[in-house]
Image (cartoon, rainbow, N blue to C red; front, side, top):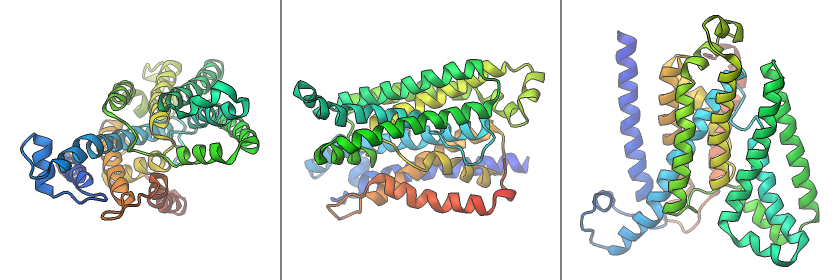
Length: 343
């Protein structure tokens, strides 16, 4: 009973922290908007400066919602991969999904410039980049799923996913070698990740696909708990291991692939958030971990984005730099404390 009350208290705190971080994220930026004005703008009340309303509704609100989707989605993806592969250092990108997305973007940006002609105009379209990233991640996913059907060993799937990632990275390196500086710079900036480039239409599409991935992960909670004790144990409880593994891979790919396509690759969140959650809750039960990871991921991503904005400054740091500064010490700590991890 005391554990249940403790978990309820932590969840209540996290929900409150999420709301606070959400509002503060909208307040902070090159222009500091008063807390009261942000609340009034969100609720549709009159605000003394119309420019504040425009900034909130057209720029900062979509960015804050994007941060919540990215943080929670990558956190859940990392949780599922760590459980499926029973590897505390697995992240949402171990299947090569992100590398596939990067390859798709590289082909559009750098490949089109090498071909020349009308193809060079493609790189100016944001939707072309999103579609290319989505197709790249989908093709890698398709290859991994075909392998998963024929391979019994889960670790073999992990290794094959990493090999697909290496192949994609190698092709990107070749394209980079032959590409002009302008296209290299464009690809480099895409690789830094960005939360502030989505309009409301793009954000709505991202949210719909994200919701499908989260729904599949919720359906996989029972299987994830069984996988903690091994596939043989899962089979003894009537779990269809192949089907469950297939759904988990699909859910992870939908979340990680779509988020990468819309925002670029965001590092460390998927790796670090599940471990933070396990340490706070002291549990390996996914009925607790999955909603907690959703909250923790959203909160950490909002904090990272607020830091990246460099409030009162006209500069914005790459979001990947901030997430790495947050995530790297956690990964180092995990390596040093590996024997004491709750898993």
